[in-house]
Length: 170
Picture 1 (cartoon, rainbow, N blue to C red):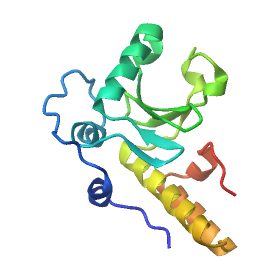
Picture 2: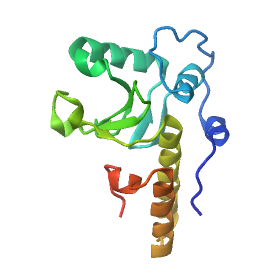
Picture 3: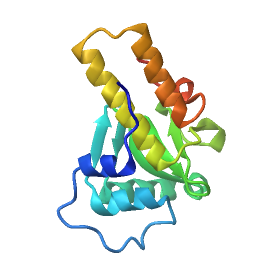
């Protein structure tokens, strides 16, 4: 029932930009797939909890981060948000995805961020699995076996990823 999408499958379903961005020299060295996403894809909302910004919005938000939180912007690059105002980041040192709960207020230190220990590809795989879960839950009542299958699939991306994910479905 639940299956991780490959990089090719994910790229196939994402909406493409009208014109590809060829020069990414305004960006720091980041995950190659994320840079490819920025150059080729439009903003995407995979689920309400995972919205990934396009190139233009990412530049604007990261300029703001740099001006107002220069210490945080040395390590983190903001990539998107949730429907509740929380935010998603990439650590520029190891390319891991991080989550920030906006209820904490201003960014003050790295300990406020939850590191998922996953790459951008794994983040997308996780988001599409949650999309599949939402679609399945809308269509029918799910059995405990199906829910366990979902949990196991999420944790196959990285151990305890299901427990780290900040939004609970069941």
